Amino acid sequence: MLRGLYTAATGMITEQIRTNTIANNLANVNTNGYKKDETISEEFQSVLLHRINDDSHKKSIFDLQNIDTAKNYLLEGTVAAENSSAPVIGSLVRGAKVAEIAVIRDQGSLENTNSPLDLAITGDGYFAINTPQGVRYTRDGNFYRSAAGQLVTANNQAVLSTQGGPINIPPDIASISIRADGTVNTVANGAANAAEEAIGQIQIAGFADRGALIKEGDNLYRPQQGAQPGTATGSIQQGWLEKSNVNVAKEMVNLINNYRTYEADSKALTTQDSLLDKAVNEVGRVS
Image 1 (tube, rainbow, N blue to C red):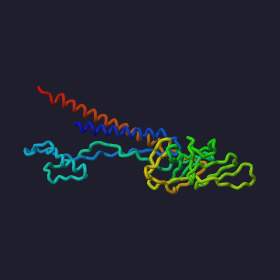
Image 2: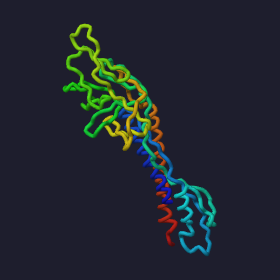
Image 3: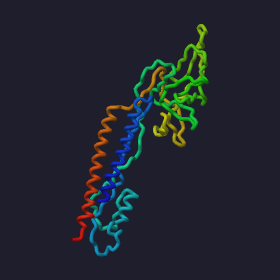
Image 4: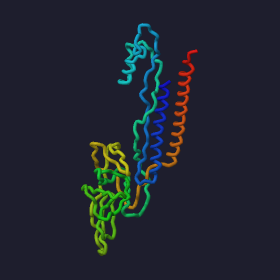
């Protein structure tokens, strides 16, 4: 009976985490380059149930409950019941748990802004950003020219070039163009028939392992220990921004479904508690 309480409670905890994840997705539906999270759950490892035989030669409670066999099952994933006479009568799920919160990295829709410093990556790749905590990565291409003349994010963090340094934009330019490979070209203001001048190339980092990056907040990702960026296959589109890949309608449906599941687990928990109350206060009463 206590096992039923634990099973229902773990289901409620899992659905609570899933609901928090959906709420975070909905809160970031208008965040540029945001990639939605998805909660992956799994059941606790099943434990074989054995019928307890009332054998007189079994004096220990550990013998009656066949502890050794259950331990072998948990450790090895198989049943080593060669020396056990207790028959297997089925399996019991121990509840649910969150295995991981996975990032869904599908491409978001593109929005045309016509701003020369708004950039979107189509395909694989991330912008490299210099932060006080080290190099971080983002899909948010809403950039600006800082007072110091550097290409920066909305948080005034420098966008890194392929050389690992900031990209400095001259103060007096007539136009700026950014190619698909990240090359930044400018035309000096007031120069008749002036040719474009390359001032740097924006770094587009790629990771072979899609799980190499971990969300850190502020729409930034940090690489896991040992993960090294490689060559990205994506390309840059100037004057566009990638929107989040959150589908509001789908998230709302998932939210309602999670609420119903949480409610069912809550009722199961209440039922188990009522049965336990009767077992303790009524069934076990001495008349």
